[in-house]
Image (cartoon, rainbow, N blue to C red; front, side, top):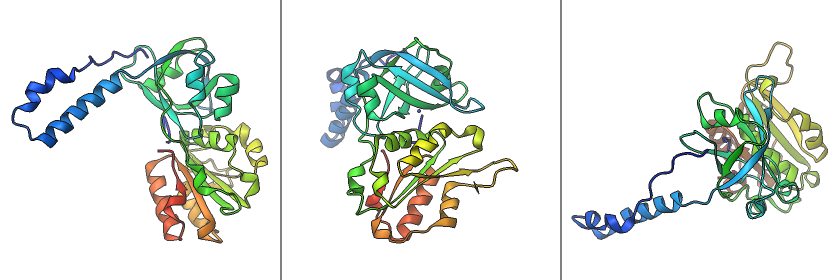
Length: 290
């Protein structure tokens, strides 16, 4: 999930399901009454969700124009939360003081960081006036609240073993690169595959995060193809959107042994999925984290 795909907020008063029964019973058919009760129960469960307080260990710009931020949370005192992060692509909700609602954030660090370092890292896209904006204005030591870990992550078991799927095409745009970073750094046997490409889209190089990690990613077998939608005149690489860059290159030798991983803008995901399926790639082998 592109992704902010990325707080002590006032909680909604607990709804009491039994107190609603008299109103629900009158004039409702049984199936409708059951659906209403289920909705009430879901609201109670959501309000009663467990939140863990933890201090920030890092808040720093992740790109040249400070539209993206590196944020890290120290979860060393919350071992149950740390060990529940098991798969790249999982996410959580984060609350900060004086915000109306939490923000959903995909975890950018691999699961091993949570287990060994007691830390969860995020790439946060800053929107003025949003919860993410408030988060990026905090500093080291400030306390935030984290929900439990959510989602299944990327189901990489679908593209295993590596010799059965030697081609893996990865597509990311903007802050959607954060769970892709987790995937690459947690490992999916990229060095045992013959063709692993990352099409990474951003407005320009000033808004492209993790450039300092590119060399390490490439050493694991991932070929990085930056795609800039508004580059300066000196840029000689791919231009436009990642789906267009892929269309120009294509180069799928065997669709039956090709898979893909997508995270970022909805239109990009839809366009890439349509093109891959039209080329014969199984939709079951096109992975997303939600």
